[in-house]
Length: 99
Image 1 (cartoon, one colour):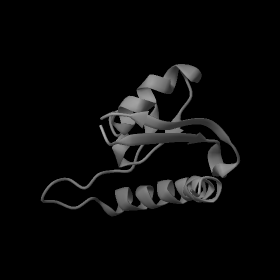
Image 2: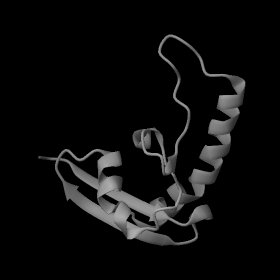
Image 3: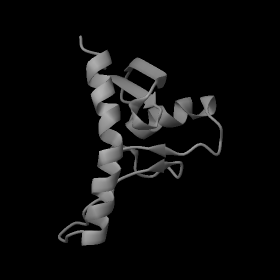
Image 4: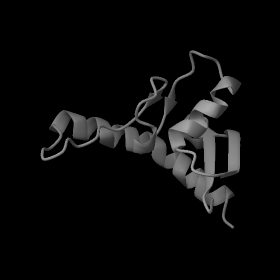
């Protein structure tokens, strides 16, 4: 049990942090941690996540490359658009949570 999981839920464009879960002990997956805290938000609320969040209907995630294959140019373009929306959140976390 040497793992500490953190989760930050941030408004679009990195405007404000609306929920933080820091230091969750144990082997909790990213999606498992999200599901534990999902009750705090409206059931219709949509989220943007990364590949660790694949499998949750409420979270838009990047397309994953199929094994022994490539993803289409359209999917690559969609991944790029999604990552450009998420980058402000990553920057906010880096600025506010330097240890």
